[in-house]
Length: 420
Image 1: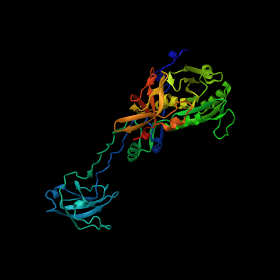
Image 2: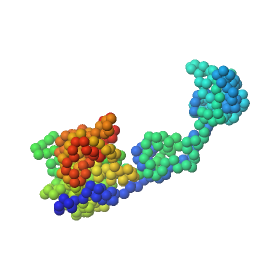
Image 3: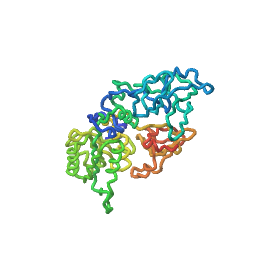
Image 4: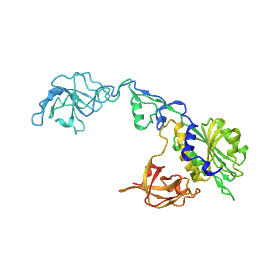
């Protein structure tokens, strides 16, 4: 199979996304819905505010009584009551009267405006604030001033959040204000993580000759967690079809929605994952014109989508970012599947091999725009190059050299860490 027959990155991504679907819905407690996608519209059963209330500490009154009020000629009103937030005052405001009112308290019947306490002669900074018999107001107000009207924010019966909306803290606050404590959201994908290879040790084991620790299993589990999905760690499978099948069976019994493995998908004598897929599922493709990450298998195992990543740690992580991330986000109900991108000016030259390449880099913001510098050695085993990076620079297919000063697209893997 010549490299020309391998899939492009976009062809491979299209195939992966075609093989996964949005998962079913579940009702979860309000705080558990944070960051998740609504599975159906949410309709308000109350109005917000539910009643007219004051937006200031001050006095509820009739605006017409202050038509001529000014600092030089204040209006004098008789104070007939005091109402705090959470209380209801059984008093009707009539012409020439006022009720002292706290922020959030219900506006009493008859009042059509509120004047802030700062615009009166009350010693409002006095800690005890005894209720005065009368108050002088040194400004006019219009009907409705400093009053939050019923339904001003939300009307009962209104669709407040539509299906597909991502719930952030502000949406959680709105739902809480409406008394909604159970939310219908797309359930979290359950993603099986399998590392393959006789050379692997568990991370708590001492190193042995010829052995390395299973970093990929933890890297991919962390990537799954970072997406709000649920990693199901299957551990390590040795380089035999039987060992791989046993681990995958555990994933089936755990009702996973997606399998992700690392290693075992190339052309080596001990690369057995592809063989297992060919006998108990299918292989849609297993080569991509990408650097790093050329050996990449996609198919199904007993009807469950399966993504086989390369074994080299950087290749595995970058391949996850490019393919698994989009698949998991789609399954979770998201429509924005890609990372944010920036157009950046390259601060050092890049040599590539002609495959679409993802170069680890640091993007910084300058007065001239965004600039990027490569993090050093781009070997597929150099994980510290990813630790230093906040972006992947995309070198298009067919390009083998990019000079300093050229523009590239940066795929921001750590948007919050962009150096400003």
